[in-house]
Structure formats: structure tokens, C-alpha cells
Image (tube, rainbow, N blue to C red; front, side, top):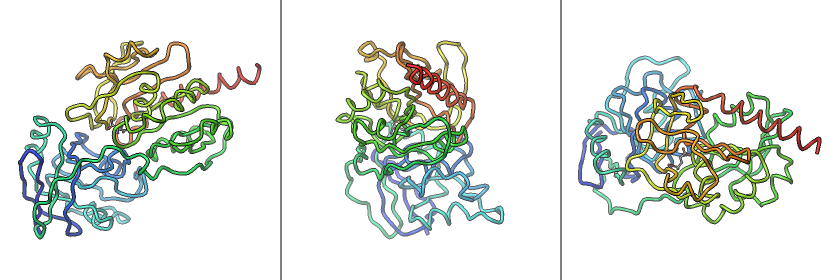
Length: 355
Ligand SMILES: NC(=O)CC[C@H](N)C(=O)O
């Protein structure tokens, strides 16, 4: 079975179609990590996107559902150069079987280097994936506003530990929750549209603003609430969480031409001068020109393009990162940020108790 990938700039590719016959549209983006495909396709921040894997062979260890970041494949389509067809661990199913079971088209045998060149030249753009039985479709507007459509979880409490963290849910990756639980926290999931006094009602000690899909500006009407939460609780923002916290204090966000998606993006910590590798998956950034309108200082910057990778509030206990300290997939170089956040939460809790 064959199928086509058609980009909005007119480029077209034919490959082998895997899965349900369909015609889907999405925003074409590329991921440059060598591995970690299970985490990537199930990461809720990829909702609505067609992911092109730059590594030439994908699927080498199948899917064992060990690394899933959510309950299902979130991407609209998957594009690979060569799909691995060899033996797999006993418990695993193949990537093609996984995609088929979830009704997500996978196209293999595509010249992914050429597709990525197109995306680098034109920028992220709409794309169609068409099974050979489907004609080209009318182009639809790309969806970037996933709120309130995102099925963010309802309030629930998990884990049991001395520190109680509110995980503000913009559709968080499973690894963020896993990390908080591994560090012995009680975690309450706070819906992104939760009431202003919800952190008090739940009795949390600190807030972690999660990753999430789409344009952070879709959350503009909620910014006063996020600001008020961050002014009252030690806060840590990851990716979309970083963007909305920056915006809540007056920053502007903008869209990069083709985003950062991969497992080896170097970031520099401006305090220590240390450069380390980070896992990334984002299209939007906090605009440096808008930072003087906020109290924030730049904590991390991207070594490749100088974009803002993290912020710190000089007075309040608020730290944010554009990259993914929970990795999944990618280097664990920044896991210490979770420890630092929890230390801050612990300190603030002691201060409150003695006040
Ligand atoms: N991983 C994320 O949280 C992504 C944030 C936002 N949707 C972006 O693309 O920039």
C-alpha cells in the first residue's frame, strides 16, 4: 500500500503506507533525536502534528508501552525513512502495529532529509497524509488553540509524601508526574482552568506548570490566575508552563520558524556558565525584547540560536525552563532542577510553618 505526504508549499513524497486508509492533516515538524520514538509520538505537546524523524532507522525496539507519555498516540501522523522490520523483544509490538491499532497513519520509505530541508526553508507548515485511495483534500486551517478542547485531567491526588505539589495540567507528560512521585511527593493535578483558590483548597505547597500543546496565547484569558498562583506559591514551569508564566508577568511569545525538537539541544546556564544538553519539543519562545516588561532574568539560553531557555524571578521563588528536565526522551542532565524546586518548596513550607 502506498501513500503520499504533501506539504503546503507543494512538495510531495510517496512512501509505504501503514495503518488505516485515511486522509489526515497536521502541522509538519521534525524530531532530531536518534531514539525515543515511543515517548515522542505519545507526548501530548505533539497533538495535531505530523512528526518526521530525522534518524534514518526507526522502530528498532518496537513498543512495550514502557515509555508512553500519555494514554495514546497524540501525533496526527508519523513519517520515517526506514521502518525497522527485524526481531523485537517478546513483549513488544512493532511501531507499525501500534500506529495501526490507534488509527494513526505511518508513512515509511520517505526521503526525510528532503522533507526536513523543506521545513527548514519554508518553516513548519500544514501537511496532508493521503492513503493512495484518497484524493488531495481542501487545506484546513491549522489548529493551534488546544484549550479548552484539550482533555486535561480533572482534579485528582496521587502519591503520598511530605511535600504536596500541584501539577497545573496543560496536558502533562507522564514523566513529569513520575519524577515528582519518584521524589516522594504527594501530587494534586490542577486543571488548567481551575478556580483561583484551588491551590488553597487542595493545600498544596508548590506548583509545577506543565508542558502542553499549541500556542500559549490560547491561554491569555487565564494569565491573571496563573500570575496570582505563582505569586502565592513556589513555582516551576516546564515548556508551555514556562511560556505562560512568562506571559503572566508581561512577556510576549512568538513562533519559531521550525521549532526545536530533539534530544541534544545545548543550553547555557547564565549563572554558572555551564553548557549542557537538553531534550526539547517546542515551536514557541518567549520574546527577548519583551523581557524588560517583566521582572524575570534569563537563567538559560539556547547555544545554537540564543533564544530564551529559562527564566528566574529575582524576588519570588519562580523558575521556568523551555526545555524538558524530565527528558523522555533525551539526556537526564537537568533532572536536578526537580530537586532544586522541591528544596525551595520545602524551605518555603518551613518558613510558612514558623510564621
Ligand atoms: N512541549 C511543550 O510544552 C510545547 C509548548 C508549546 N506548545 C510549543 O510548541 O512551544
